[in-house]
Length: 203
Image: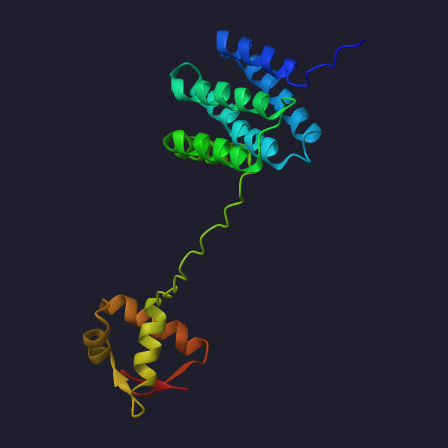
Protein backbone atom coordinates (compact mmCIF):
# COMPACT_ATOMS: atom_id res chain seq x y z
CA UNK A 1 0.00 0.00 0.00
CA UNK A 2 1.39 3.38 -1.04
CA UNK A 3 2.06 5.72 1.88
CA UNK A 4 0.41 9.12 1.70
CA UNK A 5 2.96 11.94 1.21
CA UNK A 6 2.83 14.70 3.81
CA UNK A 7 2.51 18.06 2.00
CA UNK A 8 4.26 19.71 4.93
CA UNK A 9 7.50 17.73 4.58
CA UNK A 10 9.22 20.22 2.16
CA UNK A 11 8.19 23.09 4.48
CA UNK A 12 9.61 21.33 7.55
CA UNK A 13 12.87 20.58 5.70
CA UNK A 14 13.29 24.19 4.50
CA UNK A 15 12.51 25.47 8.03
CA UNK A 16 15.30 23.32 9.47
CA UNK A 17 17.70 24.72 6.84
CA UNK A 18 16.56 28.26 7.66
CA UNK A 19 17.03 27.56 11.38
CA UNK A 20 20.59 26.47 10.64
CA UNK A 21 21.44 29.48 8.45
CA UNK A 22 19.44 32.65 7.85
CA UNK A 23 20.43 33.74 4.35
CA UNK A 24 18.60 35.23 1.35
CA UNK A 25 18.55 31.76 -0.29
CA UNK A 26 17.15 29.88 2.75
CA UNK A 27 14.57 32.62 3.40
CA UNK A 28 13.40 32.54 -0.22
CA UNK A 29 13.18 28.71 -0.21
CA UNK A 30 11.03 28.74 2.92
CA UNK A 31 8.93 31.58 1.52
CA UNK A 32 8.29 29.61 -1.71
CA UNK A 33 7.19 26.58 0.32
CA UNK A 34 4.75 28.76 2.26
CA UNK A 35 3.36 30.30 -0.94
CA UNK A 36 2.89 26.85 -2.48
CA UNK A 37 1.11 25.58 0.64
CA UNK A 38 -1.14 28.63 0.68
CA UNK A 39 -2.49 27.56 -2.72
CA UNK A 40 -2.78 23.88 -1.76
CA UNK A 41 -4.54 24.59 1.54
CA UNK A 42 -6.61 27.52 0.27
CA UNK A 43 -9.88 25.84 1.36
CA UNK A 44 -8.67 25.42 4.96
CA UNK A 45 -9.12 28.94 6.33
CA UNK A 46 -7.22 28.26 9.57
CA UNK A 47 -4.19 26.73 7.86
CA UNK A 48 -4.28 29.58 5.36
CA UNK A 49 -4.35 32.08 8.23
CA UNK A 50 -1.27 30.49 9.82
CA UNK A 51 0.59 30.72 6.51
CA UNK A 52 -0.44 34.37 6.09
CA UNK A 53 0.97 35.08 9.56
CA UNK A 54 4.22 33.28 8.72
CA UNK A 55 4.90 34.96 5.37
CA UNK A 56 5.65 38.45 6.77
CA UNK A 57 8.29 36.88 9.05
CA UNK A 58 10.31 36.16 5.88
CA UNK A 59 10.61 39.88 5.16
CA UNK A 60 11.46 40.46 8.81
CA UNK A 61 14.30 37.91 8.66
CA UNK A 62 15.47 39.30 5.31
CA UNK A 63 15.99 42.74 6.84
CA UNK A 64 17.04 41.84 10.40
CA UNK A 65 19.24 38.84 9.46
CA UNK A 66 21.54 37.99 12.39
CA UNK A 67 19.88 40.58 14.65
CA UNK A 68 16.42 39.00 14.24
CA UNK A 69 14.55 38.28 17.44
CA UNK A 70 14.68 34.57 18.43
CA UNK A 71 10.89 34.86 18.75
CA UNK A 72 10.67 35.03 14.94
CA UNK A 73 12.06 31.51 14.47
CA UNK A 74 10.05 30.28 17.47
CA UNK A 75 6.95 31.62 15.75
CA UNK A 76 7.73 29.78 12.50
CA UNK A 77 8.34 26.51 14.36
CA UNK A 78 5.12 26.93 16.37
CA UNK A 79 3.14 27.76 13.21
CA UNK A 80 4.58 24.74 11.36
CA UNK A 81 3.77 22.43 14.32
CA UNK A 82 0.23 23.82 14.41
CA UNK A 83 -0.14 23.27 10.64
CA UNK A 84 1.01 19.69 11.16
CA UNK A 85 -1.55 19.30 13.97
CA UNK A 86 -4.30 20.58 11.65
CA UNK A 87 -3.32 17.92 9.07
CA UNK A 88 -3.71 14.93 11.43
CA UNK A 89 -6.24 12.17 10.68
CA UNK A 90 -8.26 13.21 13.70
CA UNK A 91 -8.56 16.81 12.71
CA UNK A 92 -9.08 19.27 15.58
CA UNK A 93 -12.47 20.90 15.99
CA UNK A 94 -13.07 24.43 14.71
CA UNK A 95 -12.97 25.85 18.24
CA UNK A 96 -9.58 24.20 18.83
CA UNK A 97 -8.25 25.58 15.55
CA UNK A 98 -9.44 29.09 16.37
CA UNK A 99 -7.79 28.86 19.78
CA UNK A 100 -4.49 27.64 18.27
CA UNK A 101 -4.38 30.54 15.79
CA UNK A 102 -5.35 33.07 18.50
CA UNK A 103 -2.64 31.75 20.85
CA UNK A 104 0.00 32.23 18.18
CA UNK A 105 -1.15 35.78 17.44
CA UNK A 106 -1.26 36.72 21.15
CA UNK A 107 2.10 35.11 21.89
CA UNK A 108 3.95 37.14 19.28
CA UNK A 109 2.12 40.47 19.30
CA UNK A 110 5.31 42.44 19.90
CA UNK A 111 7.03 40.56 17.10
CA UNK A 112 4.12 41.27 14.76
CA UNK A 113 4.40 45.01 15.46
CA UNK A 114 8.08 44.88 14.50
CA UNK A 115 7.27 42.78 11.42
CA UNK A 116 4.73 45.36 10.24
CA UNK A 117 7.33 48.11 10.54
CA UNK A 118 9.85 46.02 8.60
CA UNK A 119 7.31 45.25 5.88
CA UNK A 120 6.56 48.95 5.51
CA UNK A 121 10.29 49.64 5.12
CA UNK A 122 10.57 46.86 2.51
CA UNK A 123 7.47 48.10 0.65
CA UNK A 124 8.79 51.67 0.57
CA UNK A 125 12.22 50.52 -0.58
CA UNK A 126 10.80 48.47 -3.46
CA UNK A 127 8.10 50.95 -4.50
CA UNK A 128 8.72 53.12 -7.54
CA UNK A 129 10.07 56.49 -6.43
CA UNK A 130 7.52 59.25 -6.55
CA UNK A 131 8.30 62.08 -8.88
CA UNK A 132 8.82 65.22 -6.93
CA UNK A 133 6.96 68.14 -8.35
CA UNK A 134 9.27 71.11 -8.28
CA UNK A 135 8.11 73.72 -5.84
CA UNK A 136 6.87 76.83 -7.54
CA UNK A 137 9.21 79.69 -7.00
CA UNK A 138 7.49 82.78 -5.71
CA UNK A 139 6.98 85.26 -8.48
CA UNK A 140 9.66 87.88 -8.24
CA UNK A 141 8.43 91.24 -9.30
CA UNK A 142 11.05 92.77 -11.44
CA UNK A 143 11.51 96.41 -10.72
CA UNK A 144 12.73 98.12 -13.78
CA UNK A 145 15.54 100.46 -12.96
CA UNK A 146 14.96 103.79 -14.60
CA UNK A 147 17.72 105.35 -16.60
CA UNK A 148 18.86 108.94 -15.82
CA UNK A 149 17.23 110.06 -19.09
CA UNK A 150 13.85 108.56 -17.98
CA UNK A 151 14.11 110.30 -14.61
CA UNK A 152 14.82 113.67 -16.23
CA UNK A 153 12.07 113.34 -18.85
CA UNK A 154 9.54 112.23 -16.23
CA UNK A 155 10.44 115.22 -14.05
CA UNK A 156 9.99 117.57 -17.01
CA UNK A 157 6.65 115.96 -17.81
CA UNK A 158 5.50 116.65 -14.25
CA UNK A 159 6.12 120.39 -14.69
CA UNK A 160 3.64 121.55 -17.30
CA UNK A 161 4.85 125.16 -17.19
CA UNK A 162 8.44 124.03 -17.64
CA UNK A 163 11.41 123.42 -15.38
CA UNK A 164 14.94 124.86 -15.31
CA UNK A 165 18.25 122.99 -15.03
CA UNK A 166 18.82 124.00 -11.39
CA UNK A 167 15.46 122.48 -10.39
CA UNK A 168 16.13 119.32 -12.42
CA UNK A 169 19.50 118.98 -10.72
CA UNK A 170 17.88 119.35 -7.29
CA UNK A 171 15.05 116.85 -7.97
CA UNK A 172 17.01 114.13 -9.80
CA UNK A 173 20.32 114.44 -7.95
CA UNK A 174 22.14 114.14 -11.28
CA UNK A 175 25.23 116.18 -12.10
CA UNK A 176 24.92 119.28 -14.27
CA UNK A 177 26.75 117.75 -17.28
CA UNK A 178 24.50 114.65 -17.35
CA UNK A 179 21.35 116.77 -17.29
CA UNK A 180 22.60 119.00 -20.12
CA UNK A 181 23.50 115.95 -22.28
CA UNK A 182 20.08 114.37 -21.69
CA UNK A 183 18.32 117.64 -22.52
CA UNK A 184 20.35 118.00 -25.69
CA UNK A 185 19.49 114.47 -26.94
CA UNK A 186 15.85 114.71 -25.90
CA UNK A 187 15.54 118.07 -27.69
CA UNK A 188 17.02 116.55 -30.88
CA UNK A 189 14.57 113.65 -30.67
CA UNK A 190 11.67 116.05 -30.25
CA UNK A 191 10.74 114.79 -26.79
CA UNK A 192 11.13 118.17 -25.11
CA UNK A 193 11.14 121.82 -26.14
CA UNK A 194 12.84 124.89 -24.75
CA UNK A 195 10.17 127.37 -23.79
CA UNK A 196 12.62 130.00 -22.54
CA UNK A 197 16.33 130.34 -21.78
CA UNK A 198 17.25 127.29 -19.61
CA UNK A 199 13.61 126.23 -19.12
CA UNK A 200 12.27 123.06 -20.69
CA UNK A 201 8.85 121.39 -21.06
CA UNK A 202 7.53 118.20 -22.66
CA UNK A 203 6.92 118.50 -26.37
